Length: 164
Image (tube, rainbow, N blue to C red; front, side):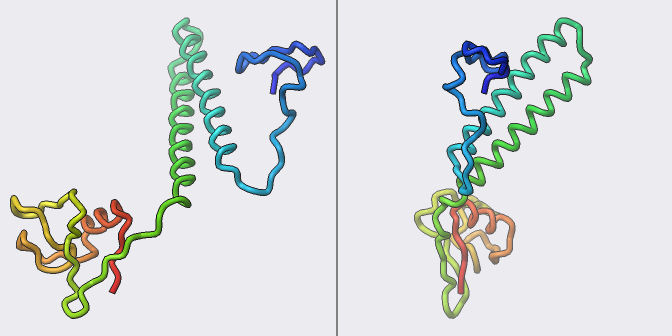
């Protein structure tokens, strides 16, 4: 929406550089009771664009000697926080579309779980040979269990859970 709302049909927006008549803009975003991920992404990217533009202007004013370093740091922190928010937003948007976890079943008698053959990102524990078990006695000489941090990390990376 243009910043200038003086009634002139040929308005100009000092923020985004848009110009044109008022009929080309919505006075406010359309109301919706449904979450629209595309609209959310566009709004987030627009916000990021505005924050980065502000950073550029503040850097130019700082270079001219008209701002303190504390003011510059505050704006850079604002940009950093905006980037973190975008990462959180896009991560959250991606989650609902993730496939349900793959299930590895423990062996009924021994409770062991072998390293799946299609997983090529092997873990090396105490030898030059890769681990061949996620749960149970391994070729590396250790006895692994599903609560070890590296086992949980590998399971999360492959969107996999271990069930009885």
